[in-house]
Length: 223
Image 1 (spheres, rainbow, N blue to C red):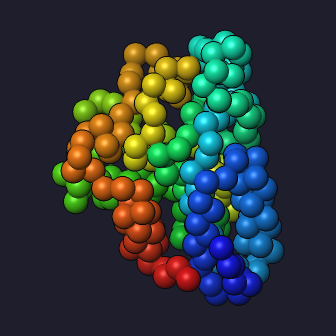
Image 2: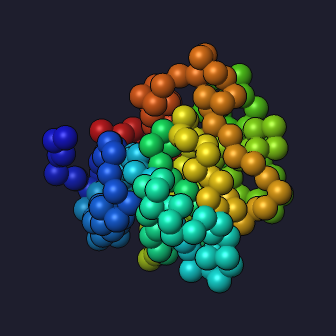
C-alpha cells in the first residue's frame, strides 16, 4: 500500500489489510501523534486482526477469559493488553475493525457524544442491509435481535481519539466462546453473515459503506 504524506487539512483513510494487533496499535500511535501535533486533521484506520483477545485495564477483564492457555494455543488466539476502555474483546479475520483518530473538539464532541456517534454510524450502515441495529442502555455497542454485532472501546488522549469499533462481518463466531464478550455473560454475539446468510455482502463493500458513513456523519471527505 502506498501512503501519501499527510497534510494539515487532509483526512486520510488507511486500509491496513490483515495486520497483527500490536503492529496496528503502533500505527495508531503514529497517526495519533500526527493529529495531536496538527500535521493531519484525522485518520480512519481499517484493519482485520489475526485471532487475538484484548484485555483492558479493568480489573474484571481477565476474569472474563474462559479458555485456558492450551485451548487458546490450539485455536491460534493470542492475548494482548490494551489501554482502551471497555472490558475483554475478541478480534479476528472477518471482523472489520475501525480506528478513527480525530480531535473531538473539531466536532464539538465529548466522549459520550463520540460513542453515540460511533453507534449511529454502525446503525445507519446496517439499515440498507435490512438489519435493525439498536443501542442498549448501559451497554456500549450495537445490537441486532439482542445479540451484539459491533463492540466498541476507545481512549481519548490529549483530546484525540484512539481505538474504536469492531463490526462482525463474517468472523468465526465460535472463537467468542473463549471469553465473556464485553463482560456480559447472558448475551450472545452475531454477525452480518449470520443474520443474512448468502445475501450478506463481503468485507470490501462493508468497508466502503463504513467510510461513507464516517464522511456523512462528520461532514468530511477522506483522501
